[in-house]
Length: 125
Image: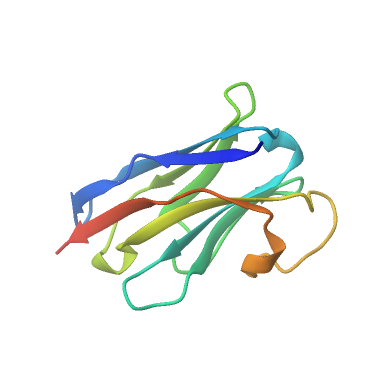
C-alpha cells in the first residue's frame, strides 16, 4: 500500500521561503521519478519539478527559486521554495512515477502512478 504524505505548507509573505516535505511509504523514492505539481485556484494542476536518475529538473517559472531534492535514508522528497511570489499560491502535490530510467512526458499527470493529498501554500503580497 503506497502512501505519499505532504507537509510544510502555510502562509508566507512575498519574498519568503517554505520547505515542503513528502514522506513516502510502500515505495522507495530512489527508484521512482519523484515530482512536485501544484494547482492554483481556478487553474489546472501543473508540473513544478522532478528528480530522477539524471538528476533534478525544474520548470522555468520556478528555476533558480525552488529546489527539489530527496533523502533516500528518510524516504522523503523535498521542495525548498525561496523568493516566493503571490503567483506561487497553490496546493502542492507530490507524485511518483515508476518510469525512473525511461523517457516520459514529465509534465503529464497520467504518467504518475501515485499522488499525495496536497499541502496548501499561500503567498501574500
